[in-house]
Image 1: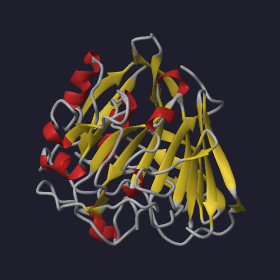
Image 2: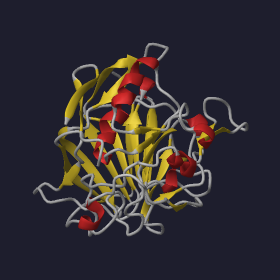
Image 3: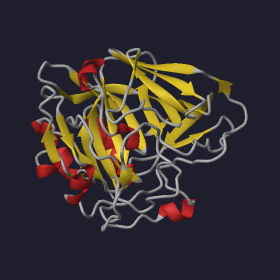
Image 4: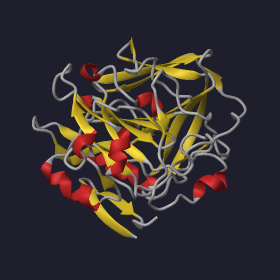
Length: 335
């Protein structure tokens, strides 16, 4: 195992060896192809897909894609097919998604945007996945090269990426996930990232909707008893998938994590947030129309994140798409 510094304020990545029922919406997705690389050891031990609790695609490769999450990007493509969707704060108090696919793939995903340093702190728990993004600032490239990922960015992805001329740059870059994975034939299959799926715990507070906030963005999630999932809105407007239907998950986790300033910044001088996703903290897990207060724990960056009840028992997620909504531990904060 090796340790390497990836961001300011002491951000450290711990990298392991480089060997080894989705959400709703109307996207036309297909099963992901089996990977040719390191086989995942944990899905059979768990008895279900470790990313969504389902029974299909247990050894399919893992693909993470960075997707724009601002008004000019709407409607997004492919989000409804992801097993896990992370919402991360970026410069200017806005947010960006990292959608993680394994059990199935959409026909198209995007708009694809650039990676951020917090991605490299999240991804080691997935082993060595394929990572698709539009690029990074030059001084971050060395960290991408050292990260335990297969870099299939726009620079390396070839014809997997296309521009949609009906949209304006930079919100018009899309990719075909199947073609992306052809560029990373050894991308690893899913591993245990700490999630547990099954019956809901006792208790919980009946909840019809809730809102996650960042300095310049907000997302609301409303429970749909008909669809048995949380439907997302962005700045008060329904958040739609380009292929049809609302985006949203069976389980939405609002994870409170310390947000600080990294060494990186954009061309306007706005600093890139560094989201600290190792250690311990609090979260609220939303499933089945209820809210459950939880604790989260992630001992190192090559390990997954566990969510537990107040008495220390695993807090099961509902089988299906999971959203991990990362907010500052405290008030919305612009580092």
